[in-house]
Length: 180
View: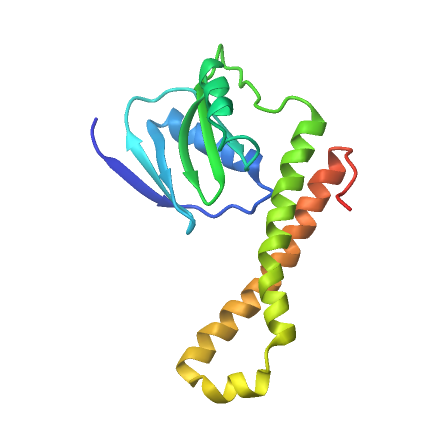
């Protein structure tokens, strides 16, 4: 079998387990991850069905060549990356799925990294909204530009608190203190 298939599938930042289960199910159907983009389009190579375990890492040590070598030596291969997210894979052994982070403290640390990234990504917008002369900005912008901008800002204002809350709940569920 040759070729690729691209699928749109959205996941929230706290849904690592759902992503991993979905990717494993795709591999069992013969669809093996080769690329994912920030807009939730997943590209798969068509191949033989296999029981492949996927794990999501954000961002931890994935940028470090020594960490990548350690992962490779442990049998993990980097399947794809996108905006800081790293998707590792390894064949399942007797149907068992090995873990990247086996203890709750390590898992909670991963969610704290994600939480910090989302809070940091919201800060420039927050500062801009406080410091900008809103009346002057509105006078200088056209309506065709303002409508999509306002829609994007409203969506961002709805999504960001939900994402931050869900990440905080995952950290708390793992029995780890919240950052701060």
